Image 1 (cartoon, rainbow, N blue to C red):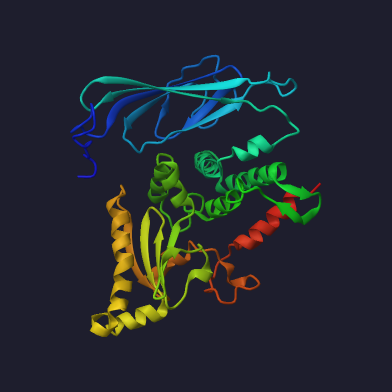
Image 2 (cartoon, one colour):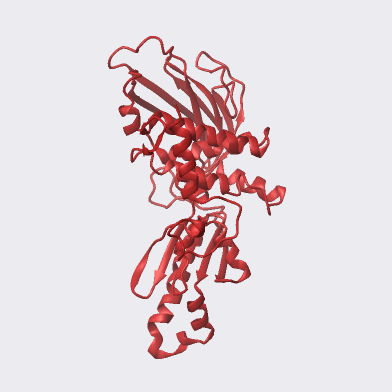
Length: 378
């Protein structure tokens, strides 16, 4: 049923047709100041070279056209570019850049369609002023692009080398765009446009895309394939899962992906894209086992138990492939699906109230301390 979804009948031109396309071809055209380095996604190179094809290959490079076997409304491709304009000469004032995406495919009604998308924007060439770049930086898209590139590199490189590349890239980014005094980690400050990017990289390093322990080769291939074809929002959920907390005295609210969010009197709903986990705190699980929810005077407890179940079903109804549903209790074996995704902050100063996680991974706080120390080195 999910595979053969159709457009609503009131959609002009597509009403009642299956929401899929076939035999897609994507071609990318650019203005002369930059070139196409490559693409990553469910595609193959057509080997079409042109003046806008860069010698620096990223992903499926050496071409500006790719074949896409099948398309649906959620298919997402990552295109990488290389600035070819020499940095020794400044671009003229008010110079504009242009990118055009030409997508040709066969619609489910049998017709061939050509969709043209053209993007225009300004250039910034003042090497002494990074503010325009800072303010236009999309850290969510950058995190997904970095994750796709890291996953692609695992096909030809050892995972440990890929992890070092991720670390070096993050350090270079922080050293270039952060505000700090040389050799003073305490002065390190990241602008709001960059503030979430380091924690995305922290979770990428710990994710199933780069950490293959307890994953079979076919599982690892499946996880990586889904990452390189899903949109930005879903990819971010894979990198840094979303966590909701349910309690008696508060409405459902987002919780930190941290060991401190685990409390005996709350229920947690974790969405990793591949798994949806409903986690009951120790006290909640004990009350449920005593069947308090079946007593009329504990109607609020019954509603508390039902709320995350309803939200979990909504997530699963709207997602394809359907995620695995896990219902677990604190200190039970299946709680590992949630605990493995949490930041192990229990050993940090002030983290005495957090659940203890036995792991070799450093916490986000230690990770950021090391990043600040390396970024400010003169």
